[in-house]
Amino acid sequence: MKNFALCTAYKQTSRWTILACIATLFVGCAIKQPEVAQPPAPPKPAPLPPVQPKPLPPEIVDKGKVSSATTPRDYRRDAAQHLYAGNTDRIYSGKMPPLLYAVGVLEVEIDKRGNVTGTSWMRRPSHAPEVVAEIEQAVRRASPFPAPARMGRVTYTDTWLWHKSGRFQLDTLTEGQM
Image (tube, rainbow, N blue to C red; front, top):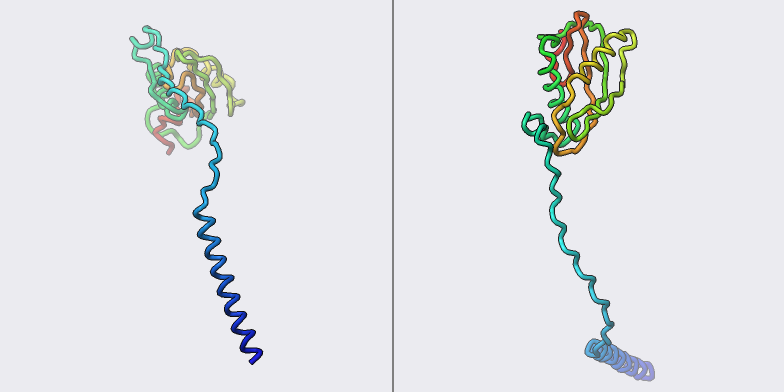
């Protein structure tokens, strides 16, 4: 009987303990926590007006020499077409033969007005210095190129495929090789 009394007392104590815990939870939820003052939010900055590009000089706009390219790769096509237009008698028509006299890779820097500001050979055809000179002259003579209106300035790269006859194709507009 002694064990029964202990068990009953334990059960009653556990019930009271559980009830006390539940009551504490309800009381804890009902007590309003003091509010911590939040720092005021910084004011939102006024939206910036859209940046308008400066208008191009009238002499460029009048001639229609403006490129709408947004990347150097896109600009390369405009530059190649411009070079072809100025060298129609030097363009090799049709597929190039399998063996070329020279292949050169030239990097050309163009300013916002389309002027050539620099050239740099990435692969110079060193066995044909006359080709190097002719390519550089052709690029300089073609200046001004279409103005890179959307980029401001651009540096593009193209590969010159040179035939022994002195005619060429640019890799951007090539008709391929046999």
